[in-house]
Amino acid sequence: MQLKLFVLSASSVALWLVPLNMLDKKLDIHKAVQGLSLCAAIACAVSAGNIARELSEQGEIEAIKERAITADVIDEISTSAYISQQQRQQEAEAILNPVEHLERALALTYDEGERSEPIAQKQLAEHEQNCSQNGESERIMQLKAKGWGKAKIILEIWGVTKGGSPKYKAAEAEYKRLMQEGG
Amino acid sequence: MRAIHLANYFVAGCIASSLLGWVASLHPYAFRAVLCLLAAIACAWGLSWLLDFSLSKLLKISVADLQAILISGLAMLLIGLGVFLCS
Image (tube, rainbow over all chains, first blue to last red; front, top):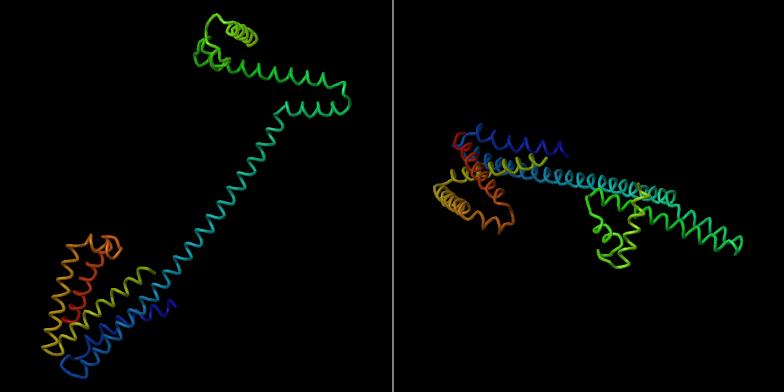
């Protein structure tokens, strides 16, 4: 196809320039030949242009296909990476979540006998309380590091405004206790 | 390949201009007819430059493309007639 394109291009230029320069314009036969060669040159040039256009369109389609394939591959890789990351995160959460382990262990204990149920519930409650206290203690430390005052921290964590109410006093006592534990 | 495609159409335009010159050389009436045709083409060319924004919207091409077509049309005409007159 490309060979045909180049032959047609070269012949169009040759048919345009050679008869005009070589033949005599005063002779009728030469003039007729010039006209015919010019018509043939136009036909050759237009044909070559059409072939070149088809080839360039095919090239563009191939380029679009390649881009689409590349985009598909990238999408597939990113999806698989995202899924594996989620799996790893779930595994890590399963390892790092002691409450779940304790619950499982307690469920096994519960299966063994009903007598162990109150003990197990107590253990779970204690564990959850410890966790919440640790969380509160950490939160207090964070807020203190930010420069927050006591009243503001109590309001943030326990939701109690400053005053002489028993709720505020209880919260203040809890705050003091956690601060002493935290050191 | 796109450049070859455009170059071939450009050569076709040049040859068409030479053919116009050849037709003009056949007879005095043909010469006048070709002159009228060239005058009409010149008017259309100038109007196209004046109305390039409207024309580009009408033809749904960019203004830069339209201006490139107009310049290349003038170049085709000049090269084709120049080749015919110099031969």
